[in-house]
Each structure stands twice: as structure tokens, then as C-alpha cells.
Image (tube, rainbow, N blue to C red; front, side, top):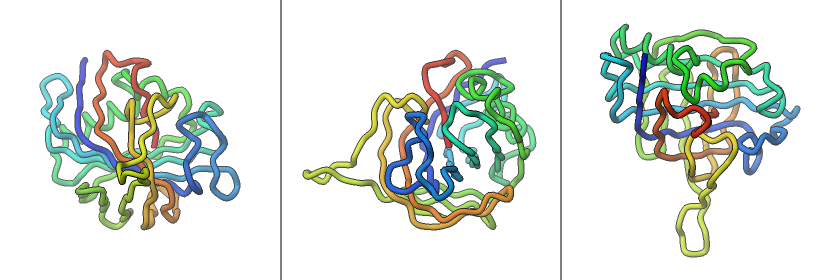
Length: 201
């Protein structure tokens, strides 16, 4: 089976300042752990004959240490406007069953909390997952006012992404946190992209 999904994501976590998870550093939140949520708005894509364009989903994470130490806890929420077939396709992709970049991370997951459904809105850096998360992203900027960009991170949702701060909170899959760090970018993942793009929450 083959998939391709393209769109925009906005992520938030409780790390202080710049989250070091993309470079396999120890999380900077209290206790040295990272609790995060990333919301993805798919503009176009499919898993075989299942059209995934217009589907939003969110990925929640708990990293007890640096990324490669493993033993992650993750959970998935798919927008309740998606069909059951679309939701099942998203779960197969994001849980790593369909390979590609998400499949690279499957061995690092110690606790898969499953998939839930809820209304998800991703717009202009603002994310709402009804009853679970609400946060807004604001990029850091350079002297000329342009967004601060990270490129070539070992574990990034995209080859380059804006970094900044988020305001809000999340509580899903028994992972409660206040938003602090944030990032935003366009993404593209596919079955063939093994080792090319490393998704993280």
C-alpha cells in the first residue's frame, strides 16, 4: 500500500525556549520530559484509493527523555468530519503501519494510546481540538521581522520549519501540559520518504 499526504502543521509542547527534541537533545521542560501536540491539516493526499484531502488530525506525544531513548507514549485524534475509512487510513499511516517516515519511529513507541475522534481546526497558526487542546503559535523573528527558521534538524516534521512560542493548553490521553514552545511549516510525507523527513510532535 502507498500513501502521500501534504499540508500544514502547527506544533506545541511544554519545553522552555527552543525544544531540543529535533536534535535529539534532552527536553527542557521540568523533569526533562516533553509533552506535545501537533495538528496537521492535509490539503491533498491519499492512501491507495482513499482520498485524504481536507482531513485534519492531531498527534500527541510524551517523550520521557531524548527522542532516540524511545519508550514514547503517543495518541492520535482524527477530525470527526472525516469518514471512518479516512480515519482508519490516518491511523495506519501515523501509527507507522504503512511505513514511510512514521514507520521509522514505530520501534520507539512504548505506549500507543490509540485513536480518538474530535472536531479539529487548524487556521493561521491557531489550533483547536475540541475538548482536548487549544493553542496559538507566534514565530520568533529576526531583525528584519522575518520568521526564525530551523533547517536540517535530525528529527523534524519538515526539512525546515518556523520556531516560536505557543500560548494555550492541552489535555488528551492523560497528557496534560501548558503550551510553551511552538513550530509551524508545510509538510509532505509518503511511503517512499523513508529516512528523508522525520516527523516529531
